[in-house]
Image 1 (cartoon, helix red, strand yellow):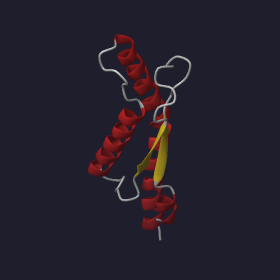
Image 2: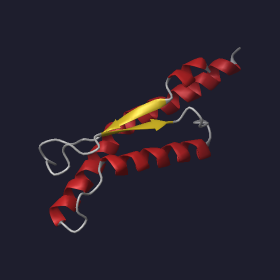
Image 3: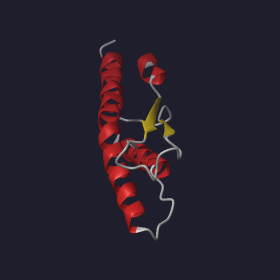
Image 4: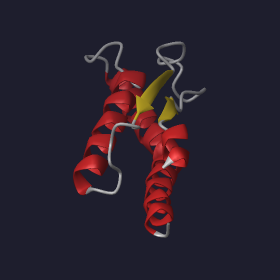
Length: 106
């Protein structure tokens, strides 16, 4: 269980680059804490996914919801950021499951 608690935060970095200059310099990262969640349960994973989505939305926030190009940039940022964090999410869940297997084998 110690290994699970050591990895209790992921940082979501915005996939902001030259393609999204409007968003550059905004809130480029958010921490997502999940040490309090049971990632072996559907409810825990759903809560983790909700926290990730909230962080993505904060990192890729619109500066002007009325500008079409800004909305496109936000959409591209969110798609790219979700893709970038996908492996971190998978790793966190896999480590939680391995932790349970380690405890069960003792």
